[in-house]
Length: 292
Image (cartoon, rainbow, N blue to C red; front, top):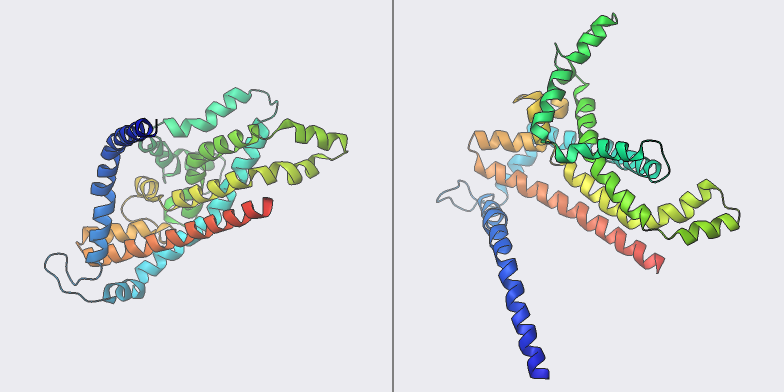
């Protein structure tokens, strides 16, 4: 019996390896190996046949005013947009979880950005916020002055709106799934004890949504680091200084074939992301221990 069980387990293991092998090979070829090679290049004075220079490329990147500006803009965008996204998606999920008029239609509207090609829809945003776009036409019709949205301090706000529009539906779905998984008995018990809506929200809903909230915050932060495509499609090659992100800096290094600074900046960005992820996971573990 034990021999048969071992053979069956070994056979299932080979089948699992066969299914996983294409994904593992693809991940290694297109992500892991290029990242390792890029990290090696960041310690060299040139990409091909270079010599080891230690952290010289990292010092050059950190001393660059362009990199510091891109890092600060990325931080400000993430710090301002992510909390707003999490709060709005949670409020919408709480609203759509109840008996709201046209609830199914509203759910479809908020999920549409997930299924519509982003590049095509961003063209509409570009037309909307252009100097001769629809929004300025409406302002002119109302007697107000036109605003150069993407070439002024309004640019970061426009980018935040696009970021919210793109990611709101996904986060809302996650919160809705978590809300529907909360046992109804807890709310019924709270009603019997005379708890009000605020008490139930804080004592039941938010407590059981905390693991999902950690995941939503983490994914929102990751998505905020991937805003380059939207910025590039709306603002073009040379955006306003307020929306000059880390990806713009690395894209410029790529265009100038400065592989060493490109890989050093990418490695710094990955380290930043790993620190954020590690901190979030540590906080989640502490919360689970507290709940147990």
